[in-house]
Image (cartoon, rainbow, N blue to C red; front, side, top):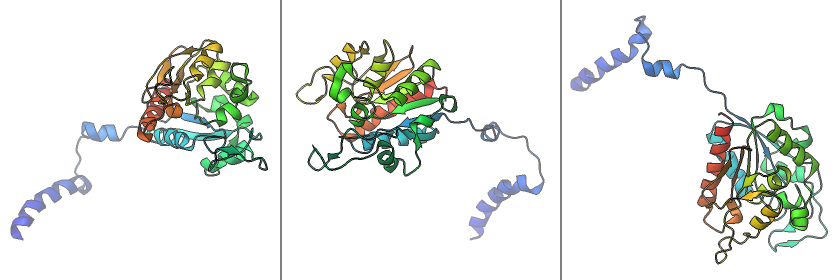
Length: 266
């Protein structure tokens, strides 16, 4: 024990020395730790319901939230207060004719109740906006699922996209959601992945042609990649447009979120 005390005692005295009234010049590391924390980006996350076939793809929304949390962002979640196009029984993949649901109320499930009507989103209060995918983007935020290139975009969604674009603030979109930017932002560059199905790996590859028909440029990217339109500050990634392992989709969404935060200067 005497030997142990002989080893520990000098270190203990050294560690307690700053508390005993002795003054030392702060080290470079201490000065760095004492600097003011850099404020994180304020990000508006726009949802379209809850469930891949009639709302927001839940894994995509969760991945976005995880990566934003890791990036130190402050997130506020929004959704339009409108009826869903229809309700899908996810056990059967078929419409449930007797049900009707509200996009805001369903999105609140993902937001754990902390959600705001999209009509109240003020671009001045946010540094960036992100739209996860899921068929809700094509059914509830727009009519793309029914009307293709002739689709209409929900008026509040259109307003938000135009206001962020006009303010030169970045917009992130994944999966099918890039069609919203393709419709609203003239000449934008986006990706929904590959342009050929490749034996079923890219089952929604035909979306690329619809994006071109909307006047946008489609850029081929892998599922773990994000495409950055520097001019328009729009960042997109394929996500579940590809049939692949979940961690690849998570990584691609991470790449998108990282680029959005970089463009926001955060």
